[in-house]
Image (cartoon, rainbow, N blue to C red; front, side, top):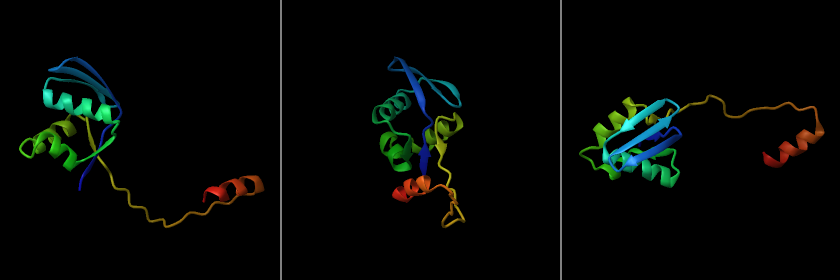
Length: 107
């Protein structure tokens, strides 16, 4: 299942059919009530990640693909990148017994 990241944003609702969103990628003016409602819902839920199922349930299967394409193109959402790490563990060398005891409590 695909996961999409929602960059932190600020939304200014001028009315139900007009809103402005600012995120790290810029400022976008929205005039589609469905997309405005979507971002208001994300803001209300404090979500910074959504699944494709969440978007599909919100917009319906008919609009799902076009909405995702618009949001990706407008840089209002981003695909989550899977980072495969080759490392199974890490080793830390510490020459301070105080730091060692503190780290040992958390690891």
